[in-house]
Image (cartoon, rainbow, N blue to C red; front, side, top):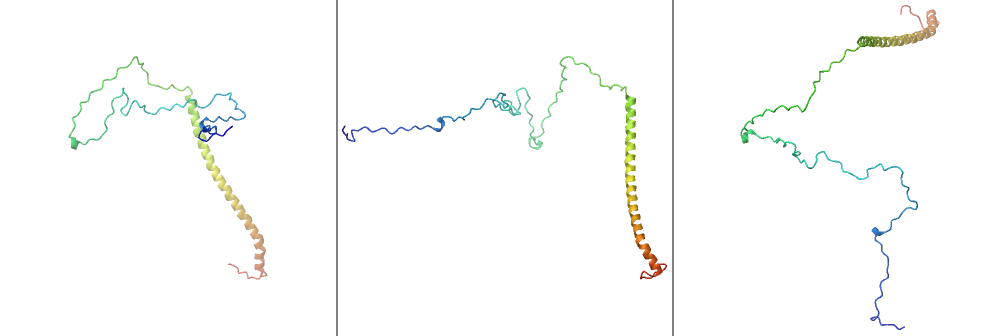
Length: 185
């Protein structure tokens, strides 16, 4: 083989490298495919937008079946003068659409147990009166028991003082306690 001059030689093609764009990369799947659930899906399948309060077909003046919206702008009578009074057309009473039955006013029936209900009401009021009286007496009894307990404690303390001061008083009368007893003080 002979070496060909570089001018006669065809340029060698560039090495081919595979370039895969990120969008065309093969999907990676987990080693264990996920099981399909046996229960139906709970969420909505297709999102349907909720309708707004006012349909776009109506516009600001209402639909085709509604009267035009009144103009509530305030107009001064000083600038434009007094408006001519529009004659009021009396509205005709709407005719009834079909037969309408006459419904008599409601009158409650007399109760068969009216006497028993009155007796129960009387007993309930009597029970409430007795309960109020019982609560009042219970409060007064509790207060009296507390006063009795306090008086009993004071009596016990007075007896203890008498046990201690009785002999000292006798010694003071005799003059052996080291203090002089003055009668009348």
